[in-house]
Image (tube, rainbow, N blue to C red; front, top):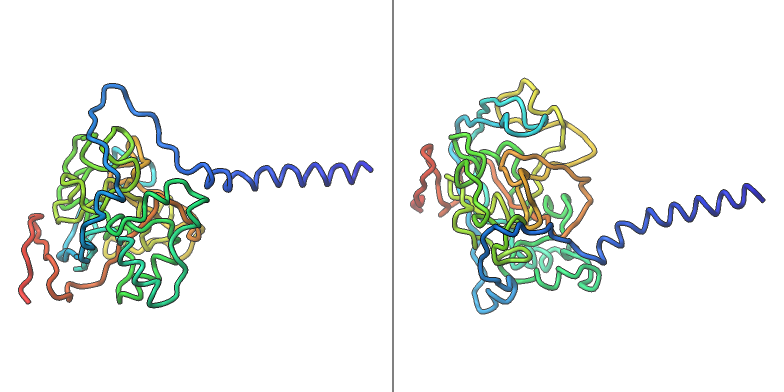
Length: 305
């Protein structure tokens, strides 16, 4: 009898813990409280704001070969040591992949759609605009899309260089916090969910890559290693060979505090999907026609065809 009661009690405990993720999905993402003295921008409905717009064309920025400074002493243990890292030339998406372009991938490949049925996540109904970033995709979903496009996910180092440039800045716009510069959770910036890509004109890196500090958090290629920056490799690092978690970079519309720094590192199991996580693609070299080619000074020009 005691053994039976123990088994029943254990089943109840397991059921309670198993219900937590489901409860979170049903409840949706809750934003942190807004400070009373922070500025506000006019509220915008992110989905309907671009309802009459055409889909934003895919664009990419060519990042030249050369070194950049990775990491910061202003961050956590896993953002150190600060080190000069050399990367070969590569091209990275100017924007996070949008719903419009991901839908084309699903239609062409019969890959699973992004997101759960709308009734299971209250914010998803407000995040299906054609120019909003696609969300609720796993690492494998993101990697499959990039592969279909003949590309790949950027490495963690490539993502940081593209967002940071060559002057060790902590945010795409510089080293000073600006509550309204990106779509994050510290101020009422006008958007309660992810905005159409490119909506925040200050959230642009020296190379011209947008939405690094806000909008949605992004999958990158690497497995996460807390001590990865202590690896002696200083050219084209690709992170650990295996692991439990994949790296997430950048801030999202629910992000607050120092996590908005473009040096900040996050991690998650690769099959996790959430309404705050998206991605962008990259490709080795600068072989694409018609992309914007960045130069060492951080400015850019159109490559001639």
